[in-house]
Length: 386
Image 1 (cartoon, rainbow, N blue to C red):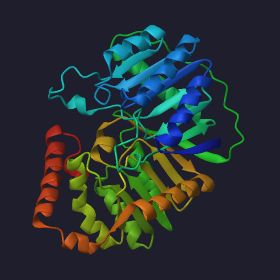
Image 2 (image 1 turned 180 degrees about the vertical axis):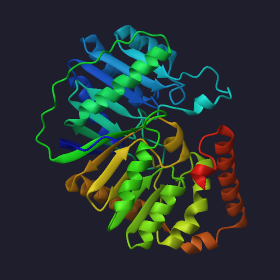
Image 3 (image 1 turned 120 degrees about the horizontal axis):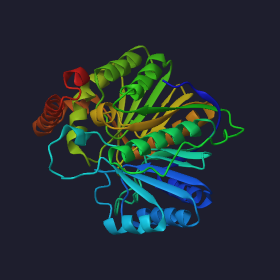
Image 4 (image 1 turned 180 degrees about the horizontal axis):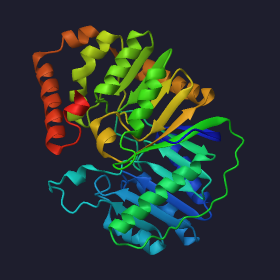
């Protein structure tokens, strides 16, 4: 696991309203190289705006590489890809989908990271895909976070992007346009400590889970976790419950809108035990929630792409920024508290006791299906959920 590096300037970006203008500005300001990874790249107003900006950059001589997940960006238009390539943008797909109905275990191993780097000096990391966060009438903009980073960890992000690009190109027998560049060390008068934690299926299989476990076990006063897809394994559940039982205030902000109903209903199977241990559970009610963040003791914080579920912790390539800085952690905590008060409903024990038999049947059926799928796939199984 990498160590903390000193000297970072961090800018918290809330939702697409703050993230996309910052991203487009960085693309337009780039002089030498842009690398961008994302799980989803939609053909909507946001997607076309980012695509046009990348093409403009390539046409003025910037080396531009766009790495998309073959499943998440399956619907990426072939015409747009050709237009971007004609403009000089290099586009690759991680594990491109050959058939939507192929039954292969490897299809579950996706590139779920949302990373970008500009001239080795500025990086973005978080959970926001390249897609409009307008989910329709009556819905708040999709709730999510990212961080703009300047400082030494940017070079680690740049190298992570390079390694994934070269791996994908090599697997597809394609020539890589990128080579290792000795970028000058970013010089920023920041005071935040930060480190990059990635999860892959090689040397870093449990890196993000371990980072959470270490921070939870060390917590003394407060843990706040906001996570869209929350189905933690046994070790994480026990760590959270132990923290609550020793007097730490443990708050979970989870999603209510069910865009992936199987995982979300399955997670409710844990509500009773968590509430009994003293954990506070809130459900976000204003729209779709996509956040993957945490703040512990108002000093430690993480923002990234990793959910706390089997997909993220056992299968996908993920990336989180871990921060030790009171100013940043308290800024993120203040926004979380605002969302909890304005947009969330506290789940009480009576909500569990009063649930209909139909609701209980749905919850336990979904939980059973998740366990079955983990067992059949060979990923996790009882070692994860039990």
